[in-house]
Amino acid sequence: MTARVEVLAGDDETLAKELARVINSAYAVGEEGLWQPGWVRTTPAEVVELTRGGGMLTASVEDEIVGCGCVQPLDATTTDLGFVSVLPEQWGGGAGRAIVDAAEDLARSRGAATMQLELLVPKHWVHPHKDRLRGWYTRLGYRTIRTAPFAEVASHLESQLATPCEFLVFRKPLDGGSSLHT
Image (tube, rainbow, N blue to C red; front, top):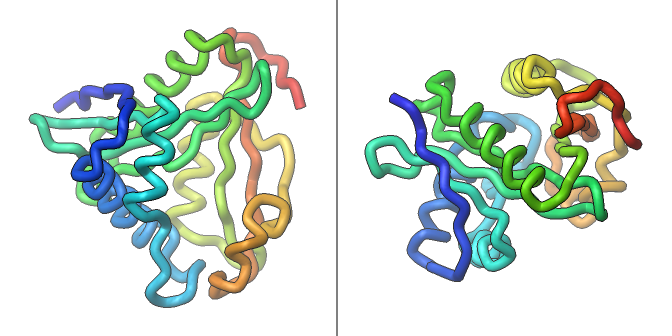
């Protein structure tokens, strides 16, 4: 079944709770072993803040929210794609691809030429879900442009890590071309 993706705006707290649940469910499985026990990726209050900016996307299948993503401008030509999350039981069903496609379309409509995303990975071992995502983003046309130290992106969370990590920074040109602007 194809996922329907919509852009949200406003501050619906009930919806924010549901989106936080989806994000935390996906990240609990997708980042297992990277964080201290009990750590959660986001809160409903954080989701409300992102939704107010008009960049939160939801993916629904048969009127049930199964995933989400968030786009935020980094500069005049680059948009960041974050919180790409799909409920684990929906992985492989196309919702993630629908979210990324909609996010790219939204970024283009807002004048962006490049989409960027960061993938948290452990420094000294291969995490199976992160390795799967790395391959998936590559198949979608994203290319790793650099590795960023964890402290560069999220220093305030470093004490919550269970293992040393870093970020792979990916970019994709949104014009269909092959040049990447760093």
